[in-house]
Image (tube, rainbow, N blue to C red; front, side):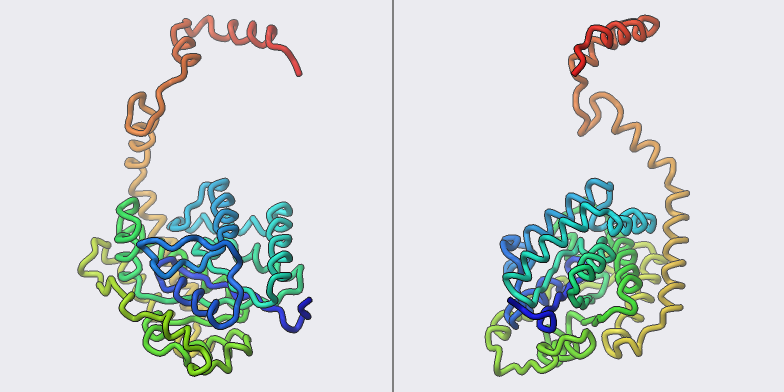
Length: 341
């Protein structure tokens, strides 16, 4: 049985394709427990994702129930998802899972790109267990993140939408972790020389076991860290992203690098809040301009025989043959004849 002083939860958060799997895997080699089973490695992440399968399924279910996606660019989506912290059933489910994992190990690392949509839920659940929680956010230039996501996941989202999603998600990550024990880590620095970056994480996030790490004591980490995996070294010139989106993303990126270099001393909350307001305004303009496209897409989706639409059922096809003036009487008759439970 672990004591309260030994217990620690590290949440690896941020935008997917930013090096979060690398950091999670490293922490696994450094003594933190990655809850099992994990999501299996594939061609997009040959060294593994470092993601607990239960967490991915839990997050995915809650996101779908609220019609939010992991790369959602809508500012309004945050209010929808932050409300999960008040969902007693979701909180109880997460708390019970965490309790079970703490019986396996007192030091846990949890990584899933969806976690950022549930930070209030995780904080409240961990607090109810008296579980100290720290956040580590991986940073990679947004152009590289967009290119990597396009290569790994295809063209389901435009590059412009992915760039907007990066801005939306990383700004909320910064805002939601203010005042908490946290550290921001640049992907390139972690690949180039991991021990000082890990020690820096330990010092900033209040994790003593990481603050004293020495390379010689952990040869397995050197074998796990492979700088050749840093592909997709691209810039905005190779991507179709509107200039205003690029400029805003680059402004946020420069401010985040200050956090990665100076910790909280490099933070300017007012500047991040101004960037949030600028993004919200930009997205609002885009929504207003694109209303006709949204209406047309809805009509295409509803049109019989349109791509992806299911054929009408036999009941619907038969109902359509009944004149409209008789349909109400028919429904009333069916209701009378239907057996009641």
